[in-house]
Image (cartoon, rainbow, N blue to C red):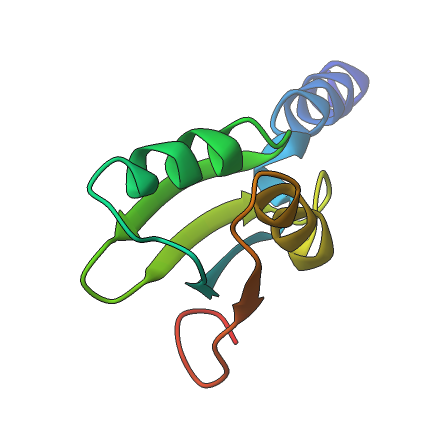
Length: 98
């Protein structure tokens, strides 16, 4: 009986292992957003990075708030993605996740 319980518990832990990955949120200052379609492009660019869970982009604040799985990506990959599409970005210190 104990072995069955231990095997079941181990299986449970293996199935929920992705839940243990570190979810982080970072706020990026985004340059070159000059028109109403720019936030859409920035959002799509960031959402395409593997590991990104959620993206909110503000044209007014020229910023993007990105929630991501830190086992799959990092801030460097996020800023590289925006820069490749003409929107250089950098983390804003002291805000969401920084």
